[in-house]
Image (tube, rainbow, N blue to C red):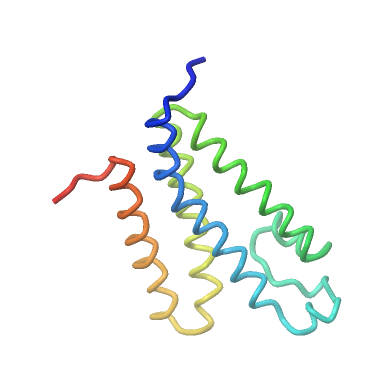
Amino acid sequence: MTIPSPRSRAHALWFIFPAVLVAVADATITLYLQTSTYWLGLFSTAAENNPLGAFFLRLHPLAFIGFMFIWVSLIVALGLCLRQPWSTVAGLTVLLGHTAGIFGTLKRFGFVAALSTFLLVALITTFCWRRAGTCAQT
């Protein structure tokens, strides 16, 4: 096992940052848009499409936050430890999955509003991947 150099660690962190950011945004939006009955303590009314996320939301909002902390930590660990092409596959899978989650949640506010999620994620990802040195500069 080789110890990554500071430069390669910085590269990996810039590369994985969009996946982390979108995962945190997805969780934040999910919590923010829960119904008033949920926030009155009826956690069984949680609205979430991911069965694992729904399980923790139905336990308690803090359980969901704890789950998301562990999930984001795992994303960072995979981004730092996996070699190419697996780190790219893992990062893109998380990025696309959480982007789709945000899209599905925001769709109730209109298709165009939800579709703008993809544009924003593409802009953030392009910026970060350029910083990581994985995007061609034009």
